[in-house]
Amino acid sequence: MDIGIDLGTANVMIAVGNKGVVLNEPSVVAFNKKLDEVIAVGDEAHRMIGRVPDYISVVRPLSDGVISDHKMTEKMIESFIEKVTGKQLFMPNIIMCIPSSITDVESRAVIEAAKIAGARQVYLIEEPVAAIMGAGVDISDADGNMVVDIGGGTTDIAVVSMNGVVAKSSVKIAGNRLDKAIVKYVSSRYRILIGEKTAENAKMAAANVYSPDGSRKILVKGRHLVRGLPEKIEVTDYDIYEAIIDSVREMIAAVKDVMEKTPPELAGDIYRNGLYLTGGGAMLYGLDRLMSSELGVKCSVADDPLSCVARGTICAFKNIDKLLDGFEHVSMYK
Image (cartoon, rainbow, N blue to C red):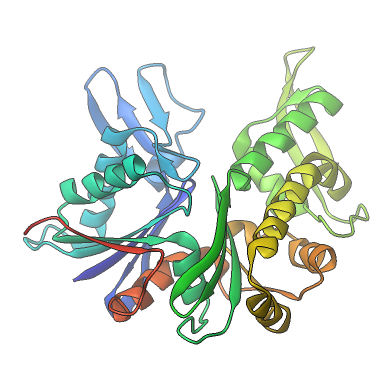
């Protein structure tokens, strides 16, 4: 069995062979410190955030696209693979997605996690390469294509041609940073402290980074910082815009930097083909129009952008012998 894993900061998605994406759950683990054991993973653990006693720790074992807690990551991957495959006695081939800027040490941590989870062979593929393949783009031709994959912890940008990466960058400006910016803004303007889950919901429901007009609104609930009592307020797309626009512009500046490193022939291809937006952050309302306006090229949001990376891993299995840059084979058992 071939398994592709998009090991994201916010979500883990797993695709299997011809079945496509079979699992999409939050990258969250609940750990009972008294019993010294994992008690929940994924959706079940995510529901516990902010609602547990002191002896239960609810953690995100991945930070900015890389492993920050090895033990919890191993437990999480093992649990998810077991959900997908059952308790069958076989060792699958696994493709793991990694950010473009990952170090060798961080790569080894991903490989070790897959090994402990029972992988026979491990392949590492950079997220933007998987993302553009999952978006249905043929990267085998001598034709430049550019992808911006906006996840939870990192935004990965790459120009791909002839099955290889020509120019790339990875910045730690993505969904989680936008959520924190909204928490900070609501706290300073309205004196109400909200949680990051509430901020994320507000971002999805009310954000408009291109032309906010006050029409998109949502009620958010939190704790008043002065009175200390529960409170609710209405935030509009103006509020969300003010909170996140600086981070969004930093993201666009990173895309410009990659464009400046791109050879002129491929830059001409990008002008013709446009730019592909993938990942959960691609669904930020108005982002495609803002990028198109700022960069002067058309921007297209991929179909089902959230699962592009996971779908791309399955495409990668079919092109293992052709993929060059951004793809590394690691044999665990020789």
